Amino acid sequence: MLPMSTAWPWSSPACATSGTEGKKKALGHRRRISISFALLAFLLFFCAILPAEADVIQAGRDVQSAIDSAQPGDMVLVMAGEANSFVVDRPLTIEGQGNPSVSAAMQKPAIKVLSDGVTISGFQIRGVAKDSTAKFSYYMQNPAAAANAGLDDANSAIVVKGNDVSIKNCSVFGAQVGLSAENVRGLTLQNTTMDGCDIGASILQSSEILVTACRLANCRKYGLDVEGSSDIEIYNNSVVGNTNGGILLKESEQGNVSGNLISQNTFGLALWTASHCQVRANSADHNEYGILVTDSSNYNNITDNVAEDNSRSDIVTGFGIGISLQENSSYNLLARNRATGNFNGLELSRGCQYNAVYSNNASDNRHGIRLNENRNNLIFGNNFYRNDINAYENQSLNIWNTSIGNYYSDYRGRDEDGDGIGEEPYALPGPESRSFLFPAAVESIPTTAVADGVVVISRKARSSPPKWSDSAIQDSFDPSAPPFQKEIKL
Image 1 (cartoon, rainbow, N blue to C red):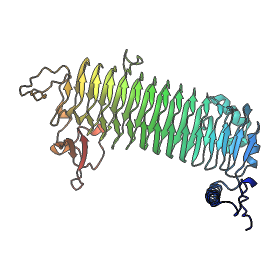
Image 2: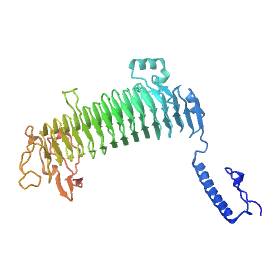
Image 3: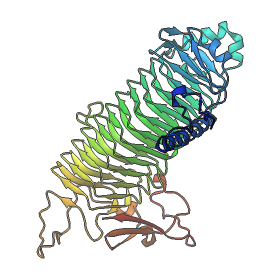
Image 4: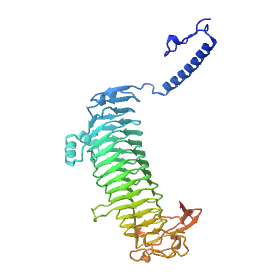
């Protein structure tokens, strides 16, 4: 019998066997043939899923030349040292090795991304600060540039105009705007530092945004400014020492802000006219406002956050708010948060209605919870203890219990049946509520019921959103609309 050929490209001649050898050895050979065919099939499949003509291009200082010679899907490696600014106009991966540095110039970003499907990683970027005089001089000397640009454009270190773009493992220092993106879909900012900018990252009118494992620090306006956007994930970031705000979500919806460290900002996290946002398990300390929700309604859930030692002296010595709902913020949930060591642990102020404040712990604050000029909020099942004033209500008309009320460490009422619930109401300190400011039409007050450990809050649907300026006027309801219900587990 002729020898069988088994000369696979990765085999040595010694692997081949002939039919003149023993049966046991032949069986072993057939097993090797079977394994080889399986390995070949896997390698052919693996090769099939690789980019057809992807190359790795080494770039020196002139990164732009390497980009211009690259094909879509290629990787451009940029070595350590100083590199020139560049524009990415095709889907590439641009990877810095050894932290190469790139500098922006007046009205010229260090990196500009025009294409979809781009990944940038591993760069140190020096930005250009705001300088109105220098900008005016630049446009006077470059009239062609002025004709094609907005004169109010910020000096941005990174500009993103493409979809599905990732910026990873980079650092930006001293820019007017660290990263600017507008009208994009699918932007990832990961493990990146924005330090000493006016605004760390500005993301406008965009969707599918992910910001994670970043450090946003020492910015003069905002660490992260997200406006007019949706489907936003912001988690596990460090947001520290920003003069105005740490994180701002303005006129945005479906944001998920979780697991962030937010410290030493004026406004730590601010929702401004935002809706359908989840703010969960963040730690906010030494801010003027730890978490601020203003003019934001419709199912913002503020849960499981820690607001601790938010105490500064910019307004009043020791002033600082843990979690604050303000200015017509309605139909939101505050649950299972812990507020300690603040001036006001929890706060609802000016025209907030139909919010549920449940199962929070407020301790060692000047005020555990303070309500000012609100009505029809439900506050129950909370623990208020060791605060100078556990609960304070001013010119408000709210609901402070369902089947259970709240725990107050200074409660001195009687519990004659021993069920743990006092029979005498807790007297809230503060001016007597001026009920004539708040006409309590029966249909405007939510009803509550408890079934199987779930509190169900019901109300009739509105035909218009609440406004503080209209708070003395009878609320308007659409009687044909289905009732609203919200369930909260005890």
